[in-house]
Amino acid sequence: MERQSVEELEQIVDKLVQANTVFLTAVRSSYAVGYYLRYVGRMALPTLQLFPRHQNSALGDLNDAKEGNVLIAITVTRYSRETVEV
Image (tube, rainbow, N blue to C red):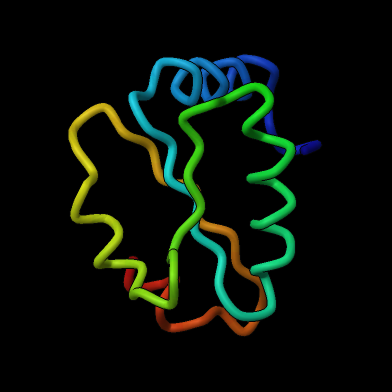
C-alpha cells in the first residue's frame, strides 16, 4: 500500500463502484483469501462474484463479462497457470 498514492486508490475504488459486475478470481492456495474477500466485499459491492464456480474453468465463467466489468485476480507465488491465463 505504501507504493499506492491516494489518487490511485481513489481511481481504483471509483472503477469498482461504477462497474456493472466485479469478477474476483482466486484458485489453489489463494482461494481462501479470495473467498474471504468475496464474503466481506459483497457488503460494499453487491456485484462482486467469485469464480471459478462449481469447478468450472475461470475462463468459462468470464464468458459473461461485458464492457464496464472489472476483474480482480488474487494469486501468490508460484502463480497458478489458470490465473495468469485469465
